[in-house]
Length: 208
Image (tube, rainbow, N blue to C red; front, top):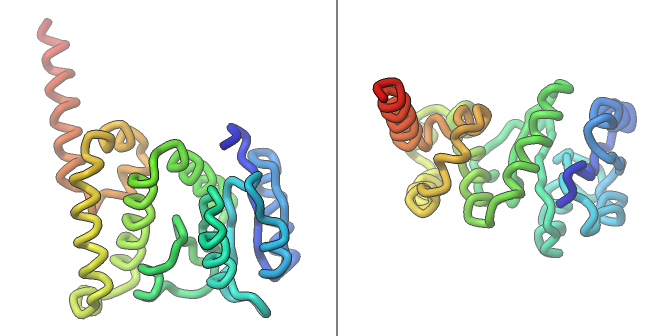
């Protein structure tokens, strides 16, 4: 993917879409689409990141997302929506999820995060997409609701498997503060190991 990301904003409120575009214009090449049909006409291999509204007339954001994944396009997708998340998000193919209202800093941050994830392989991309979903559900759902959800239990099991598989690469990613925050819950043990190793190396160097 290009170093200067190409973003597509899909938002059925033109004023809001244009505001997002103005916020991102200095950091990205930006296109806008004001409904799902226009979005699918605009998406091709040149698009790096899609900021996708979920509730739109005509083709919904969910349908647009499914079509993007069915086309096997190599782009990252963040839902930017007023729809509060529920357990149905676990099976959806997005990479991150922002609940409106969102700020300029949040949009710029999510672009940076998704572009960084794109530098890594599919296994790591899946890990961070699932970690985002778990963090979101942890914030929005009670412990009782999470415990009663089979989808949530499956999510935790899959994260446990992926955490083991990507452990060798995790150290590099945890150096990024944003990923430390994102994975604070699901990778607490890995973070602790990373900090212990860093402190050990620092102490060793100071004693030399």
